[in-house]
Length: 360
Image 1 (cartoon, one colour):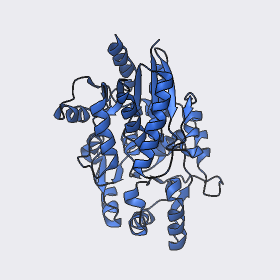
Image 2: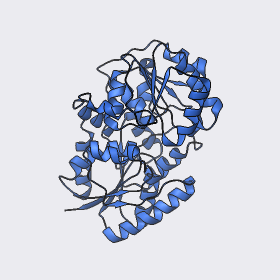
Image 3: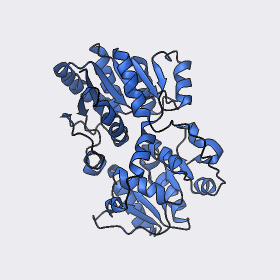
Image 4: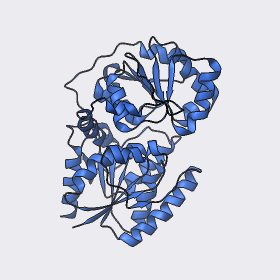
């Protein structure tokens, strides 16, 4: 049985891992390497527990520091594991520092790299994840694209060979776990003191974690002013690094419409997506999940990450500006149930089949 080392480090990767690993382990021996990039229990361990993901074989404990520091430490530690395990392939997801570090460590040891969620492009190197995506795609032996537009980017860059449109594992996960929601997952919703947070009957759901939106009071407060002006409460699970600023602004400005919560697990999050009136986010994953659920979404970001979600106004970009956010939230939206650009919900099977063909 061929051995595949899989590298993960952040919560979007855990979601994709849950569905791919379930199928992969039927055909291959998988060794799971967790870099530790997301180390908080609610950012990491809770995903492994609630999604029945096998516990990591290695936890490298690399978190914090600059992009260069993190990537360098991960590269060295992943290399040590690869030298010990001698896998036949390395599998990486998405576009984090963990992704690029794993790919570089493997390719320098002549281990073929398989990249799930290949081909995504924003068109600017100002975004650090763009660098990770480009480098990883260009050193990979197998590339799996979530959408037709991602395949087109790979074609333009001359690396469409050994690239395949498989669909999005996040769509697989959303379909699989949504069917298994029973309301108990909402017990994850707690305030900053750890007390249960009552979910309003009608609410909006917001996530906001990107440095571009949270690195100054002015930007985050513009977003908060928009949320305060809405006609129903806004549930906002806060990333640990943004905790202090968010609490200070909400308390200091006396905002009553914003319900601050601690980080939530995957099932709680998709339950909130499914129940919310509308979504405001700066997350690449949550804007897709909003689309999967047929929910109007406004993404506070400068670049289109998933053009497929923008059709018929289902997802609109906004600046961190009160007026712009409110205007976009009030715009007309139309969902076409026949439009399924992220595949058929069986991307994991397609990915594993192509890996088998690669070895054959």
